[in-house]
Length: 239
Image 1 (tube, rainbow, N blue to C red):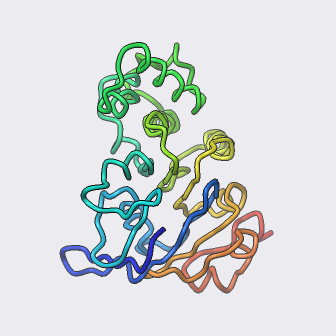
Image 2 (cartoon, rainbow, N blue to C red; image 1 turned 120 degrees about the vertical axis):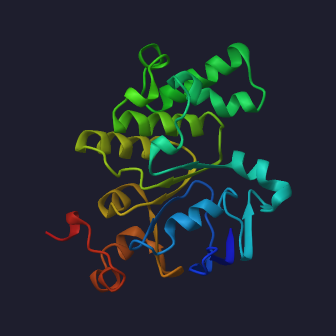
């Protein structure tokens, strides 16, 4: 739950202006808005990478604060738009193992955790465990970054522009994967067709405020609403 969240950057730029929203267990929610609307800033608050200037965030029933950061970062898994912001170890196995290893998982339990996370994202462990992360395709990197988050067994997945830079086949694979994962999901995206197909609810934000929140089929078919806030109808609805 996010309640009256305000945040300004050190230079004084107001990025969030009273954001209030809540996610229900198991929901798939799209977060859409023009560039600079505050989407990424909001996502960075949800597991404590940024702390509120004013307002309240509750994660898993606990108020977000310095004392609950460790809990929040396990409960909410954040997948960045650029996978290279998350992949920094020499091999895929080491990248995926990094989080659970820091929670003291070791030995066969750690190896099984890594294999399971790779399998969840459709990467065959035998082929990928010893691959160098920097040599992967962008689609493979995104899946390895997601596997690293899934290895932490979060209750909520927060994804920033997950389809950006993907070719059509990789995009379709991602959409199937998002549909299959059981976690509650908040997906910030400019890909409104993906939002329409994979998310039952859509939140529109602009200039740091929620301007619409409702069923995706209703929100994403409202041409006037979308164009007012710098967006366009999904291609599947504009024919």
